[in-house]
Length: 363
Image (cartoon, rainbow, N blue to C red):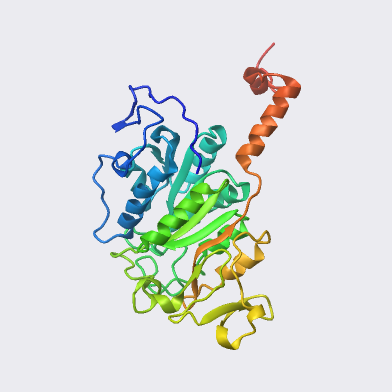
């Protein structure tokens, strides 16, 4: 990713934001130590958030972005503690509103690298509206959704991604709700970059983060994240050494889709447009799919996302979609520049007064 231009390196407190010391020079090369804050990391023992944080901190120096140009926004939930642990600008915002706040920051400051950290409850419940509109607008932000299929911070209630029949403190007789499929939801909102990865697969997680950083526009990544206290082994079929090779479909652009312990299975379209798994050796080679993450039509990526089932029989991970389209940030800047060229500098006081205001009680 090309280096973003630096703004001022010194903040109002002599180069510091709270207790965070910023990079004194934009040319300094960051190390992993530089991006770790001095805050004690506090999650439950064994939480998948530790692995995601470690991968994220290790990846950030690769951006070649000064810390004062890096902004991390979160909402509410266990995952939303992450901004405390990165030595950069950040904001622990209110429940579900991180995409809205990130939109304002990214649209007004295109020199910043803006990341949103959220969870399945934060993003898909109270924050669902903000999430889908950020995706459709294609704001230049990166959204990491930690999905553990449970409300962890509030001690184990069912979440929008919990499976039907899930017994929790808030659903003692089993959940009646049909769960969201986060990848399908993102694709349905016309997101230009959509991916899925797993907390325990650091190499794969890091590769997806790199691809998201390189993407111009909204990048949405669902991360399967284990909650050992309230929903342990929710993703065991795709994480356990004895079963993952049978269940995981690794998507690589331009490569034939092969999976299974012997990589003997492929995918093809069925009669009604859904995808089906078949033995590659017995299928017509011309019908077997080669992964195309750059397909303009979202239908193919959406069909891949619908392979998800409760038993994780065939679970794709990797980049489902990576296409280029105009971003909200660029369109807004162009619109403002055009208006300024036609009408000159704006007058905020005149705009606020407008033609539809009046003085109450004036003689």
